[in-house]
Length: 386
Image (cartoon, rainbow, N blue to C red; front, side):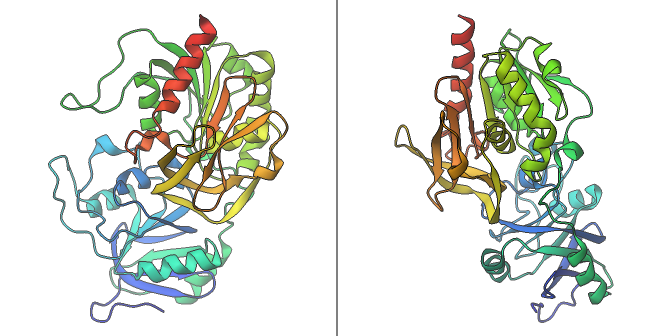
């Protein structure tokens, strides 16, 4: 049990094994259940909280200075936070950044998300690494009144992420057009005004900055819901298809996504590019399998080796499932691997412009190590239409 020594606790994190972490609550009050993961990034807490890939998860931040740059709507990766809550070492401080329009505590409260500070995040991270991502219940009560038995029971009752399709919960309700490009000084976000490659992006939980990178690479993007059919895609006569990131078990989402991808690959020879869950969807469509990881990869400092060029990229990752390298079929080339644990981080078809990566090139921790992937996609479409 971990508890601050002086200040009475107003929040409690209960693990399914009965372990309790007490701290100071901030943001919304109430209770939530989720899987617990940790993220090692030193920046980007707002982007992490609004990344749809974190649906069904509470995030432990290993970096202690969370909240120091405040929040701004420009940095949201989707309309509102998707992560269930956050765990931090120190209570969030007042923001010190010229772009901030609000503080983290107020923003979380407004969005209905719970935070807990004053937690021994190093101990918690070690527990996650050793035992795997636990199921937890997180509660915030300003009066510090907690029903511990009920909290532990709530943690134990959480269904987990295996076998769960979360893409349907975070995808767009209907199709839309995207033309906003990457942020640049001093204009900020600008929009494309010239024709580009017609790209259909399948939204399994797409981050806005991925769509911006596609637009900046010369793409005219139409976004379709996760449940779009192959006919929906092909009716738009695209030059290329993009498969987005997203949450949940890829095998569950694959029940409807895999047949769609397979039909697109069968009926057309257009380039296909996938990221994160989109990478896993492509791998499943090509005949590979995915497996649940012990604690996943979550951070902005993950070294990945390009097996074909020998280059090492510093990447951003967020995934709890991975493609099983041993199941990659003939004709599918493993292009990237994690230098942390050797897990698969990229594939391509040997004889077609179809490829994907597990990591997030749009997050730019390198900062430009991986942007070439968007340029490669655009070049492949240009070559196909030449």
